[in-house]
Length: 398
Image (cartoon, rainbow, N blue to C red; front, side, top):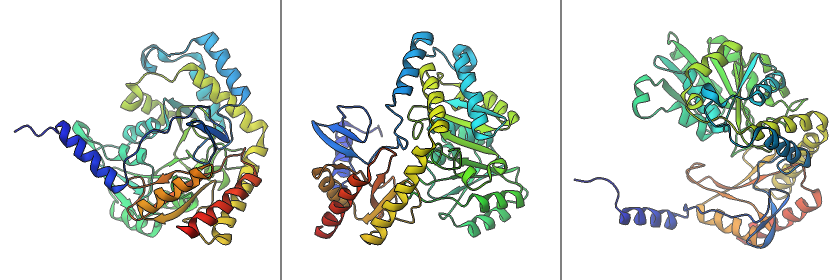
Protein backbone atom coordinates (compact mmCIF):
# COMPACT_ATOMS: atom_id res chain seq x y z
CA UNK A 1 0.00 0.00 0.00
CA UNK A 2 1.25 3.47 -0.90
CA UNK A 3 1.80 5.38 2.35
CA UNK A 4 2.82 8.65 0.70
CA UNK A 5 0.43 11.52 1.43
CA UNK A 6 -2.06 12.29 -1.34
CA UNK A 7 -3.02 15.84 -2.36
CA UNK A 8 -6.11 15.46 -0.20
CA UNK A 9 -3.94 14.43 2.75
CA UNK A 10 -1.91 17.63 2.41
CA UNK A 11 -5.10 19.66 2.19
CA UNK A 12 -6.45 18.05 5.33
CA UNK A 13 -3.17 18.58 7.18
CA UNK A 14 -3.13 22.26 6.23
CA UNK A 15 -6.78 22.62 7.25
CA UNK A 16 -5.90 21.13 10.63
CA UNK A 17 -3.17 23.73 11.10
CA UNK A 18 -5.69 26.41 10.18
CA UNK A 19 -8.16 25.20 12.79
CA UNK A 20 -5.46 25.22 15.48
CA UNK A 21 -4.36 28.73 14.53
CA UNK A 22 -0.91 27.39 13.59
CA UNK A 23 -0.87 27.91 9.81
CA UNK A 24 1.73 30.45 8.74
CA UNK A 25 1.99 32.56 5.61
CA UNK A 26 4.50 35.04 4.29
CA UNK A 27 4.26 38.73 5.04
CA UNK A 28 5.72 40.48 1.98
CA UNK A 29 7.51 43.76 2.65
CA UNK A 30 7.51 46.53 0.06
CA UNK A 31 10.54 48.16 1.69
CA UNK A 32 13.91 47.31 3.12
CA UNK A 33 14.51 46.64 6.81
CA UNK A 34 14.20 49.58 9.15
CA UNK A 35 12.38 51.00 12.15
CA UNK A 36 9.32 51.36 9.93
CA UNK A 37 8.51 48.98 7.09
CA UNK A 38 5.95 48.95 4.29
CA UNK A 39 3.56 46.00 4.57
CA UNK A 40 0.84 45.92 1.90
CA UNK A 41 1.02 49.69 1.54
CA UNK A 42 0.90 50.43 5.28
CA UNK A 43 3.85 51.72 7.26
CA UNK A 44 4.24 49.67 10.43
CA UNK A 45 6.64 50.12 13.31
CA UNK A 46 8.90 47.08 13.00
CA UNK A 47 9.23 45.19 16.28
CA UNK A 48 9.83 41.82 14.62
CA UNK A 49 13.40 42.21 13.36
CA UNK A 50 16.67 40.85 14.74
CA UNK A 51 18.54 43.76 13.13
CA UNK A 52 19.37 44.89 16.66
CA UNK A 53 21.88 47.61 15.79
CA UNK A 54 20.01 48.91 12.76
CA UNK A 55 22.82 47.97 10.36
CA UNK A 56 20.92 46.05 7.66
CA UNK A 57 20.58 49.16 5.50
CA UNK A 58 23.46 51.24 6.92
CA UNK A 59 25.18 53.29 4.19
CA UNK A 60 28.65 52.00 5.13
CA UNK A 61 27.51 48.41 4.69
CA UNK A 62 25.67 49.14 1.45
CA UNK A 63 28.83 50.77 0.07
CA UNK A 64 31.02 47.85 1.17
CA UNK A 65 28.69 45.43 -0.63
CA UNK A 66 28.75 47.48 -3.84
CA UNK A 67 32.54 47.59 -3.84
CA UNK A 68 32.80 43.86 -3.14
CA UNK A 69 30.43 42.99 -5.98
CA UNK A 70 32.49 45.15 -8.34
CA UNK A 71 35.67 43.34 -7.31
CA UNK A 72 34.56 39.77 -6.62
CA UNK A 73 31.25 39.38 -8.43
CA UNK A 74 28.27 37.92 -6.60
CA UNK A 75 28.49 34.14 -6.18
CA UNK A 76 31.36 32.16 -4.65
CA UNK A 77 30.95 29.45 -7.27
CA UNK A 78 31.80 26.37 -5.23
CA UNK A 79 32.22 24.90 -1.77
CA UNK A 80 35.09 26.18 0.35
CA UNK A 81 37.32 23.11 -0.13
CA UNK A 82 36.94 23.10 -3.92
CA UNK A 83 37.39 26.61 -5.29
CA UNK A 84 35.04 28.70 -3.19
CA UNK A 85 37.50 30.17 -0.70
CA UNK A 86 38.42 33.70 -1.72
CA UNK A 87 40.80 36.02 0.06
CA UNK A 88 37.82 37.89 1.48
CA UNK A 89 36.61 34.71 3.27
CA UNK A 90 40.02 34.31 4.90
CA UNK A 91 40.11 37.99 5.85
CA UNK A 92 36.69 37.77 7.50
CA UNK A 93 37.67 34.63 9.42
CA UNK A 94 40.82 36.32 10.69
CA UNK A 95 38.79 39.34 11.74
CA UNK A 96 36.19 37.20 13.52
CA UNK A 97 38.86 35.21 15.37
CA UNK A 98 40.34 38.45 16.70
CA UNK A 99 36.87 39.79 17.55
CA UNK A 100 36.00 36.66 19.55
CA UNK A 101 39.42 36.27 21.16
CA UNK A 102 39.94 32.87 19.52
CA UNK A 103 42.80 31.27 17.61
CA UNK A 104 40.70 30.72 14.49
CA UNK A 105 37.24 31.06 13.00
CA UNK A 106 35.23 29.39 10.27
CA UNK A 107 32.50 31.13 8.25
CA UNK A 108 29.34 29.28 7.17
CA UNK A 109 26.48 30.41 4.89
CA UNK A 110 24.03 30.78 7.81
CA UNK A 111 24.00 30.68 11.59
CA UNK A 112 21.82 27.57 11.37
CA UNK A 113 24.53 25.82 9.36
CA UNK A 114 27.21 27.00 11.78
CA UNK A 115 25.46 25.10 14.58
CA UNK A 116 25.01 22.05 12.38
CA UNK A 117 28.69 22.11 11.40
CA UNK A 118 30.00 22.65 14.93
CA UNK A 119 27.86 20.04 16.67
CA UNK A 120 27.83 17.37 14.00
CA UNK A 121 31.53 17.83 13.43
CA UNK A 122 32.45 17.46 17.10
CA UNK A 123 29.95 14.91 18.42
CA UNK A 124 29.64 11.29 17.37
CA UNK A 125 29.06 7.77 18.56
CA UNK A 126 30.09 7.30 22.18
CA UNK A 127 29.59 10.96 23.03
CA UNK A 128 26.83 12.59 25.08
CA UNK A 129 25.36 16.02 24.24
CA UNK A 130 23.61 18.01 26.98
CA UNK A 131 21.03 20.54 25.79
CA UNK A 132 19.03 23.24 27.52
CA UNK A 133 15.38 22.55 26.69
CA UNK A 134 14.93 26.04 25.22
CA UNK A 135 17.92 25.92 22.88
CA UNK A 136 17.39 27.12 19.31
CA UNK A 137 16.02 24.66 16.74
CA UNK A 138 19.36 24.59 14.91
CA UNK A 139 21.08 23.24 18.03
CA UNK A 140 18.40 20.61 18.52
CA UNK A 141 18.41 19.58 14.84
CA UNK A 142 22.21 19.32 14.84
CA UNK A 143 22.16 17.12 17.91
CA UNK A 144 19.37 14.79 16.81
CA UNK A 145 20.95 13.31 13.69
CA UNK A 146 18.58 11.58 11.28
CA UNK A 147 18.90 8.99 8.54
CA UNK A 148 22.18 7.10 8.01
CA UNK A 149 23.96 9.57 10.33
CA UNK A 150 22.01 8.08 13.24
CA UNK A 151 24.40 5.11 13.21
CA UNK A 152 27.13 7.45 14.37
CA UNK A 153 24.89 9.71 16.44
CA UNK A 154 25.71 10.76 20.01
CA UNK A 155 23.39 10.27 22.94
CA UNK A 156 21.37 13.42 23.69
CA UNK A 157 20.27 14.47 27.16
CA UNK A 158 17.95 17.46 27.63
CA UNK A 159 17.76 19.34 30.92
CA UNK A 160 15.00 21.78 31.98
CA UNK A 161 15.67 25.39 31.09
CA UNK A 162 18.55 26.76 33.18
CA UNK A 163 18.27 23.84 35.61
CA UNK A 164 21.98 23.38 36.18
CA UNK A 165 21.52 21.05 39.15
CA UNK A 166 19.78 18.66 36.79
CA UNK A 167 22.57 19.16 34.26
CA UNK A 168 25.14 18.28 36.89
CA UNK A 169 23.33 15.04 37.71
CA UNK A 170 23.27 14.15 34.01
CA UNK A 171 26.97 14.93 33.68
CA UNK A 172 27.76 12.79 36.69
CA UNK A 173 25.90 9.83 35.17
CA UNK A 174 27.84 10.28 31.93
CA UNK A 175 31.27 9.84 33.50
CA UNK A 176 33.35 7.45 31.44
CA UNK A 177 31.77 8.33 28.09
CA UNK A 178 34.11 9.30 25.29
CA UNK A 179 33.20 12.97 25.18
CA UNK A 180 30.68 15.14 27.03
CA UNK A 181 29.47 18.24 25.20
CA UNK A 182 27.31 20.97 26.75
CA UNK A 183 25.52 23.18 24.22
CA UNK A 184 23.56 26.32 25.08
CA UNK A 185 22.33 29.59 23.69
CA UNK A 186 23.77 32.56 25.55
CA UNK A 187 20.58 34.58 25.06
CA UNK A 188 17.49 32.47 24.48
CA UNK A 189 15.66 33.65 21.39
CA UNK A 190 12.06 33.30 22.59
CA UNK A 191 12.45 34.21 26.28
CA UNK A 192 15.20 36.82 26.08
CA UNK A 193 16.89 35.53 29.24
CA UNK A 194 20.54 34.63 29.81
CA UNK A 195 22.31 31.33 30.28
CA UNK A 196 24.48 31.30 33.40
CA UNK A 197 27.73 30.97 31.51
CA UNK A 198 29.83 31.15 34.70
CA UNK A 199 28.00 28.12 36.10
CA UNK A 200 28.32 26.25 32.82
CA UNK A 201 32.05 26.95 32.71
CA UNK A 202 32.36 25.58 36.23
CA UNK A 203 30.42 22.42 35.35
CA UNK A 204 32.33 21.80 32.14
CA UNK A 205 35.61 22.06 34.04
CA UNK A 206 34.43 19.81 36.86
CA UNK A 207 33.22 17.09 34.49
CA UNK A 208 35.86 17.50 31.77
CA UNK A 209 33.26 18.50 29.17
CA UNK A 210 33.35 20.59 26.02
CA UNK A 211 31.27 23.78 26.13
CA UNK A 212 29.66 25.17 22.95
CA UNK A 213 27.87 28.53 23.27
CA UNK A 214 25.68 30.03 20.56
CA UNK A 215 25.99 33.81 20.80
CA UNK A 216 23.55 34.53 17.97
CA UNK A 217 21.46 37.09 19.87
CA UNK A 218 24.37 38.52 21.87
CA UNK A 219 26.99 39.13 19.18
CA UNK A 220 27.34 42.85 18.52
CA UNK A 221 25.13 43.86 21.45
CA UNK A 222 26.51 42.51 24.73
CA UNK A 223 29.95 42.83 26.27
CA UNK A 224 32.32 45.77 26.60
CA UNK A 225 33.26 45.51 22.93
CA UNK A 226 30.07 43.89 21.66
CA UNK A 227 31.65 40.44 21.48
CA UNK A 228 28.81 38.66 23.24
CA UNK A 229 27.52 37.54 26.60
CA UNK A 230 30.69 35.56 27.29
CA UNK A 231 32.61 38.85 27.21
CA UNK A 232 30.00 40.48 29.45
CA UNK A 233 30.38 37.62 31.97
CA UNK A 234 34.19 37.53 31.58
CA UNK A 235 34.36 33.86 30.56
CA UNK A 236 35.42 34.14 26.92
CA UNK A 237 38.66 32.21 27.31
CA UNK A 238 36.92 29.36 29.14
CA UNK A 239 34.43 28.56 26.37
CA UNK A 240 35.67 25.92 23.93
CA UNK A 241 33.53 26.79 20.91
CA UNK A 242 31.60 29.99 20.21
CA UNK A 243 28.99 30.02 17.46
CA UNK A 244 27.61 33.26 16.14
CA UNK A 245 25.69 34.82 13.31
CA UNK A 246 26.31 37.64 10.86
CA UNK A 247 22.56 37.86 10.24
CA UNK A 248 21.22 39.62 13.33
CA UNK A 249 23.00 42.55 15.02
CA UNK A 250 25.60 42.59 12.22
CA UNK A 251 22.80 43.12 9.72
CA UNK A 252 23.85 40.66 7.01
CA UNK A 253 23.96 36.97 6.21
CA UNK A 254 26.08 34.09 7.48
CA UNK A 255 27.28 32.30 10.57
CA UNK A 256 30.62 31.53 12.16
CA UNK A 257 32.40 29.22 14.56
CA UNK A 258 35.31 30.47 16.71
CA UNK A 259 37.58 28.04 18.54
CA UNK A 260 41.13 26.72 18.78
CA UNK A 261 43.07 26.20 15.57
CA UNK A 262 42.88 22.42 16.02
CA UNK A 263 39.07 22.40 16.42
CA UNK A 264 38.58 24.64 13.38
CA UNK A 265 40.91 22.47 11.28
CA UNK A 266 38.99 19.37 12.41
CA UNK A 267 35.68 20.94 11.37
CA UNK A 268 37.07 21.92 7.98
CA UNK A 269 37.90 18.26 7.41
CA UNK A 270 34.88 16.55 8.98
CA UNK A 271 31.84 18.85 9.27
CA UNK A 272 29.53 17.82 6.43
CA UNK A 273 27.22 20.88 6.69
CA UNK A 274 30.31 23.01 6.01
CA UNK A 275 32.07 20.80 3.46
CA UNK A 276 29.14 20.15 1.15
CA UNK A 277 27.71 23.61 0.64
CA UNK A 278 28.63 26.57 -1.54
CA UNK A 279 30.63 29.30 0.14
CA UNK A 280 29.09 32.51 1.42
CA UNK A 281 28.89 35.20 -1.31
CA UNK A 282 31.97 37.46 -1.03
CA UNK A 283 29.81 40.58 -0.74
CA UNK A 284 28.27 39.12 2.44
CA UNK A 285 31.79 38.85 3.86
CA UNK A 286 32.43 42.50 3.03
CA UNK A 287 29.16 43.46 4.72
CA UNK A 288 30.16 41.56 7.87
CA UNK A 289 33.55 43.27 8.09
CA UNK A 290 31.93 46.68 7.61
CA UNK A 291 29.48 45.80 10.39
CA UNK A 292 32.32 44.80 12.73
CA UNK A 293 33.91 48.20 12.01
CA UNK A 294 30.68 49.91 13.05
CA UNK A 295 30.38 47.83 16.22
CA UNK A 296 33.86 48.99 17.21
CA UNK A 297 33.44 52.63 16.13
CA UNK A 298 29.93 53.24 17.43
CA UNK A 299 29.50 51.66 20.88
CA UNK A 300 26.64 54.05 21.51
CA UNK A 301 24.39 51.88 19.37
CA UNK A 302 24.57 48.85 21.66
CA UNK A 303 24.77 50.88 24.88
CA UNK A 304 21.68 52.87 23.94
CA UNK A 305 19.84 49.68 23.00
CA UNK A 306 20.67 48.04 26.34
CA UNK A 307 19.44 51.09 28.28
CA UNK A 308 16.27 51.35 26.21
CA UNK A 309 15.54 47.62 26.62
CA UNK A 310 15.91 47.89 30.41
CA UNK A 311 13.46 50.81 30.49
CA UNK A 312 10.96 49.04 28.23
CA UNK A 313 11.07 45.79 30.23
CA UNK A 314 10.31 47.72 33.40
CA UNK A 315 7.37 49.47 31.74
CA UNK A 316 5.88 46.23 30.42
CA UNK A 317 6.43 44.11 33.54
CA UNK A 318 6.19 46.72 36.29
CA UNK A 319 3.91 49.28 34.67
CA UNK A 320 1.51 47.01 32.75
CA UNK A 321 1.97 43.91 34.91
CA UNK A 322 2.54 41.63 31.90
CA UNK A 323 4.57 38.42 32.01
CA UNK A 324 7.89 38.88 30.17
CA UNK A 325 9.27 35.42 31.05
CA UNK A 326 12.33 36.68 32.89
CA UNK A 327 13.72 38.59 29.91
CA UNK A 328 16.84 40.60 30.59
CA UNK A 329 17.78 41.50 27.01
CA UNK A 330 16.55 43.31 23.91
CA UNK A 331 14.19 40.36 23.24
CA UNK A 332 11.02 40.94 25.26
CA UNK A 333 8.25 38.33 25.10
CA UNK A 334 4.79 38.92 26.46
CA UNK A 335 3.38 35.55 27.50
CA UNK A 336 -0.27 35.22 26.49
CA UNK A 337 -0.94 31.47 26.57
CA UNK A 338 -3.71 30.43 24.15
CA UNK A 339 -2.89 30.50 20.44
CA UNK A 340 -6.10 32.25 19.36
CA UNK A 341 -5.74 35.06 21.89
CA UNK A 342 -2.09 35.59 20.93
CA UNK A 343 -2.97 35.85 17.23
CA UNK A 344 -5.84 38.21 18.09
CA UNK A 345 -3.54 40.52 20.06
CA UNK A 346 -0.93 40.51 17.29
CA UNK A 347 -3.59 41.52 14.77
CA UNK A 348 -4.89 44.26 17.06
CA UNK A 349 -1.38 45.67 17.37
CA UNK A 350 -0.95 45.55 13.60
CA UNK A 351 -4.21 47.45 13.18
CA UNK A 352 -2.74 50.09 15.49
CA UNK A 353 0.44 50.31 13.39
CA UNK A 354 2.83 47.90 15.16
CA UNK A 355 4.30 44.71 13.71
CA UNK A 356 4.63 42.37 16.71
CA UNK A 357 4.62 38.68 15.73
CA UNK A 358 2.55 36.01 17.44
CA UNK A 359 4.91 33.15 18.35
CA UNK A 360 3.10 29.82 18.57
CA UNK A 361 3.87 26.10 18.87
CA UNK A 362 6.02 24.36 17.80
CA UNK A 363 8.38 27.35 18.19
CA UNK A 364 7.34 27.61 21.85
CA UNK A 365 5.67 25.03 24.13
CA UNK A 366 1.93 24.48 24.03
CA UNK A 367 0.16 26.98 26.28
CA UNK A 368 3.09 29.41 26.07
CA UNK A 369 2.19 31.37 22.93
CA UNK A 370 3.45 34.90 23.12
CA UNK A 371 4.02 38.25 21.49
CA UNK A 372 7.74 38.67 20.78
CA UNK A 373 9.08 42.22 20.76
CA UNK A 374 12.58 42.77 19.40
CA UNK A 375 14.05 46.19 20.15
CA UNK A 376 16.60 47.77 17.85
CA UNK A 377 18.98 50.67 18.35
CA UNK A 378 17.03 52.96 16.00
CA UNK A 379 13.76 52.66 17.92
CA UNK A 380 12.72 55.91 19.59
CA UNK A 381 11.46 56.03 23.17
CA UNK A 382 8.51 58.19 22.12
CA UNK A 383 7.38 55.49 19.67
CA UNK A 384 7.82 52.80 22.32
CA UNK A 385 5.76 54.87 24.75
CA UNK A 386 2.98 54.87 22.16
CA UNK A 387 3.32 51.08 21.87
CA UNK A 388 2.99 50.77 25.65
CA UNK A 389 -0.26 52.73 25.55
CA UNK A 390 -1.65 50.44 22.86
CA UNK A 391 -0.46 47.31 24.67
CA UNK A 392 -2.22 48.42 27.82
CA UNK A 393 -5.43 49.03 25.91
CA UNK A 394 -5.56 45.82 23.82
CA UNK A 395 -4.45 43.57 26.68
CA UNK A 396 -7.19 44.92 28.94
CA UNK A 397 -9.88 44.73 26.26
CA UNK A 398 -9.12 41.21 25.16
